[in-house]
Figure 1 (cartoon, chains in turn red, brown, purple, cyan):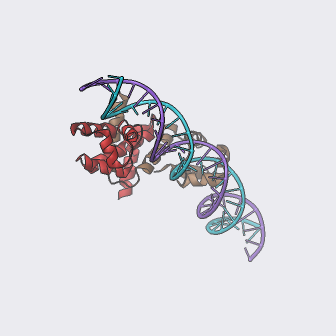
Figure 2 (spheres, rainbow over the protein chains, first blue to last red):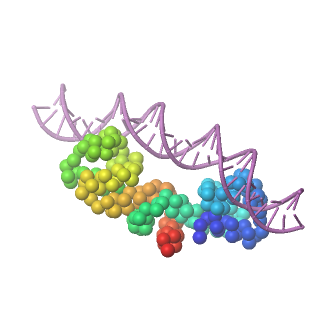
Figure 3 (cartoon, rainbow over the protein chains, first blue to last red):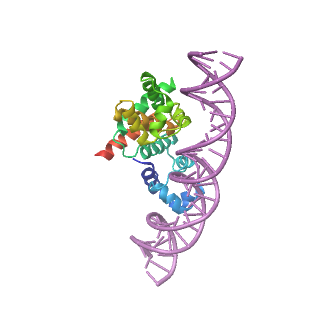
Length: 96
Length: 96
DNA sequence: TCTATATTAGCCAAAATTTGACAAGTCATA
DNA sequence: TATGACTTGTCAAATTTTGGCTAATATAGA
C-alpha cells in the first residue's frame, strides 16, 4: 500500500472531498489530487496533518510515506533489494 | 561499509593516487576526494567505471552505492527501519 | 627548514530538479 | 445542459545539485 492509496481510502471511508482536505492543508485541489495519485509527494508536515485529519496513526503514515520516497529513488535498479537489505544493516550500525 | 570507504580501501591496496582515478573518471581530484569521503555521490557510470578500475564486482558496487543513496534520504527519521522493510515488501509486489 | 606532492576545504555559478499555482480538461449526475 | 468533483498540462519561481576552480592543509623527503 502506497501513501496516496492510503489517504484516498481513508478519505472515501470518511466521505470527505479532496477540496476539503486540500483546504485543511492549505494547498489547491489539483495539488491534493496529485498527492493522492502519487504524482507529487506530500511534505512531512502534510503527512502529519493528514494523519490527524483522517484519525490515522502518525507513525504508520510516516512509514508509508518514507517507503514511497525510498522506492522512488531506488528506481528500477536490479540491485534494489540487495541495497535495501544493505541499508538496513548500515542503519542498525548507525543507531548503535 | 559505505561506498566511499570501499573505494578508498581498494585504491590504497592497489597503491593508486586519487588523481589517477580522478583522471580516469575525467573529474578533478577535489571531486574524487569528495566522493571518497561521501561528501558527494558518484554517478552511476562512475560507479561502474570504478568497479572496473579497481577490479571489483560491479553489482556489489552498485548495491553499496544505492544503499548510500537510500540512507541519505531516509535521513534520521525514527521510522526509517520500518520504512525500509515496508519498501522491501512493496518492491517484491512490484516485481511480481 | 624548504619543497614537492597528495589530499581536503570553501566557494561560486551553471544546470537540473522540485515546487506551487493556475487554467482548462474530463467525467458523472441531476 | 449545468454543476460539482476530480484530473491534466503547463509554467515560472524557488531550491538543490553539479562541476570545477582556488586556496588551505598535510605529509614526506632533501
